[in-house]
Image 1 (cartoon, rainbow, N blue to C red):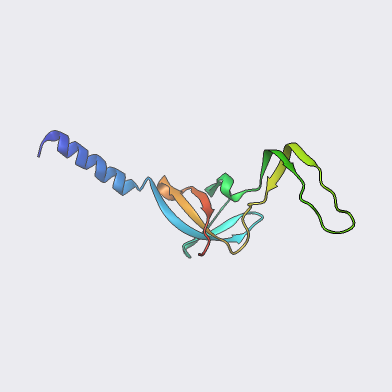
Image 2: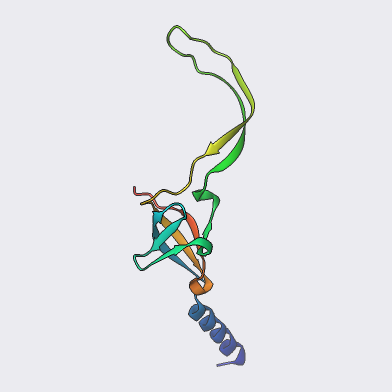
Length: 119
């Protein structure tokens, strides 16, 4: 085996042993403060949890150029609806939801990638 092959193999083994990142599953057990049970083995909370925009309420500015829909009944009307409107996407986690986690090297931090939904 050449020196280069030995170095490559040693590097690959070091990465495998350090587990830079691994996928894990969890269940939200508390909201305030947020706590997640990871694979029925341990609870994580506080600084151990990093959230992505997929699992928090976010404010989004949306540009619209449309008309209201016709309404049936005595207050029937139709008008233009346009401009930049603020929408809040309510995506924060709830107790009991299952989440997909990415364990960062050493297991000191977990990134909550998204919630899991059943088909």
